[in-house]
Image 1 (cartoon, rainbow, N blue to C red):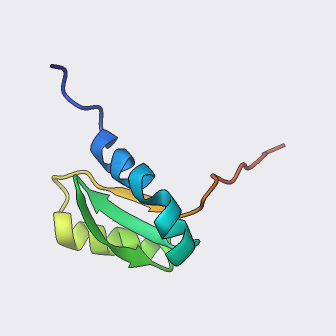
Image 2 (cartoon, helix red, strand yellow; image 1 turned 90 degrees about the horizontal axis):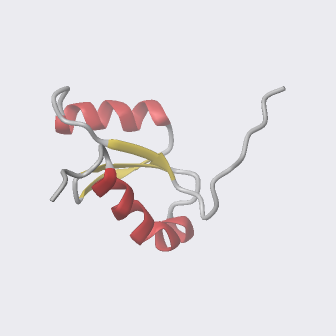
Length: 76
């Protein structure tokens, strides 16, 4: 069995809960490490600081903004 790709578990957790979270926490930033959902935050910076405090520098964690559909940005 191959090891999971970086943040694969966290992305699966996000996708499993996306619909519920989009209804209850639209536009907020969620922090996830493995199967642990830390919390939802209004700003990315607050989410990042909380993730560092909870998980430290030696463990990866996901910060993702909650939307039902991912926004698409065009840069010209």
